[in-house]
Image (tube, rainbow, N blue to C red; front, side, top):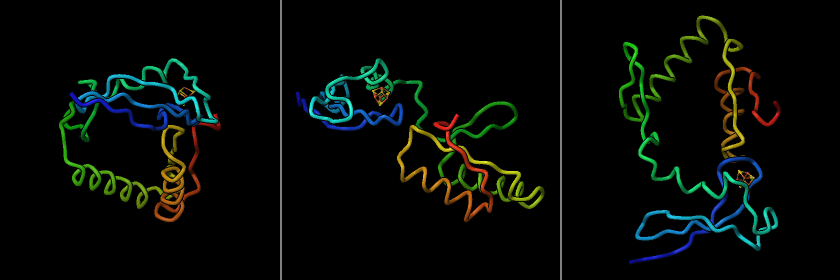
Length: 135
Ligand code: SF4
């Protein structure tokens, strides 16, 4: 048996609490709050304590789904991204760039949020970009 702990950041909200994931034989089995983190000082909310449970959840989505005839089918990333790109292009051509809006998230990194606003402004051509933390 191999046991190790891995320091990481909670993905559930923008607070950025630090904790160690307990890993046994490659499977995440628990969470230990990081006492030296200035963000959470050894504390976690209920979501942070249970964050490890979704990692191996059998219901977790692990690949894109495309809706066809009222039901979903699994697809590869290239196919899914090509479909999204073609749909966005069609909407932009038919209704203009301001008919599209993008919502960023507190559950992703600052860098990913930056890319979303850059994509909205430089690729789509709209300033319609918002963030759930502003609501
Ligand atoms: S432990 Fe709770 S407060 Fe801390 S980042 Fe996760 S969800 Fe947010």
